Structures are given as structure tokens and as C-alpha cells.
Image (cartoon, rainbow, N blue to C red; front, side, top):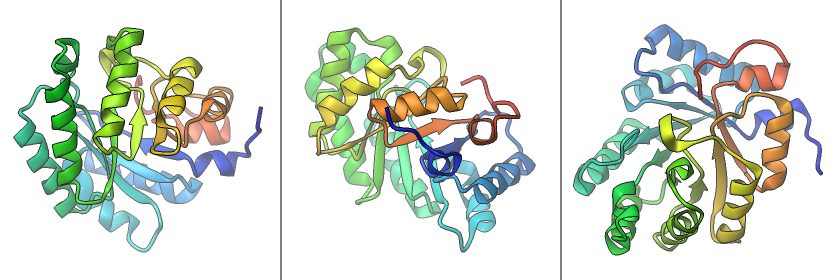
Length: 228
């Protein structure tokens, strides 16, 4: 098993707070954490992208946002338009949820086509699909990941970390890494709250970690910003 310094792990963390009650001051603190600890990116709701751009101007911290969650049931056209909107605002990377109901209904063409349309709307930006493994059977996990890969996503991501999406496990990350091969990368999210778990998940094959406990992971003190 590889070991990582706190600085090395920080470079793989996308520091996250997408709570609905987050304030402008919270966003400033979130961005300041990224600057202080050297996190890879900040993950926030679309409405805060422009604030983050101001706080992070001149830095190499990536501005990341999420769309289509926590339900994933918006029309495909709405998701594609939201993708175009967040890119126009300045998002550099976008995590998104496809329609899980399509997948579980066996509507594989619809599921694949939605992902492909969202990826197309991203116009070359980094896309990460939140597969919500906590709601899927083992067979569905494989199918979802394979369809997403064929639709052109940049990253396969086990979960949003919200609700039924579930927490990252070594087994799920290894599965995603195996399916991704050299065609995509893997992001892990959900329940990553200390150095030990972060190290294990990275060794399982993740390239990025989505967590609200970034400061706690790299310093050993403090609390997660959210419950996921």
C-alpha cells in the first residue's frame, strides 16, 4: 500500500460544501481553506461560482460544481442547459447525476443518451458522473459505469455522498477503476473523513476525493463541514 503525505492528499481533495443553507461567508471560508491547504478544487452549488472566482482569482484551485442531484430526475434538456449555464459562470469541472430511474427500469439507451448529451453540453470540460452506488445492485453498478464510460465522461464517481447515494468503499472504487481502465478516472465521495480512509481509497484506485472533511484529513483536527 502506498503512503501519502498530507500535502499529497490535499492535492487530491475537492473541498466540498453543497449544503442548501450555506452562506456567502461560508463560501469565503471554503475557498480560503483551499488556498491555505492546497486542495485541488472547491466544490459548491452553482449559485456561488462567481463568488468563488473572486476569492480564488490567480490561484490554481479548480472551481467545481454539481448539477442534477440529489434526485436526478430533471429532463435531460434541463440538465444540458444547466451544464451550459454553469460553464458560462466559470465552472471548470462539473459533477452530475443521470436519471437513475432510467437505469433501474432497464432503459439503458435513454440512460446512455442522457449522459452523452450532458457531456456534449460540457464542451470539453471535465465531467464526473455521480453513479449513486448505494441505490444499485452489483449488476446495476457495472452496467451504469459501463454506459457512462461509453458516453464519454471524464470521471466515474461512486456517489454524490448525499442520501441514498452511499459512502465510498474500497470494493466499489476498485470496481470503478477496473471498468475505467485507461479511458477515464475515478473520483470517490461519501464518508471519507480521515487520513486512513483517504489513503485506502486512493490505493483502491481513486484519483480524486470529494469530501467536506478536507481540513480534518490533512491536519488531523477539526470537523467535517457536512454529514457526507
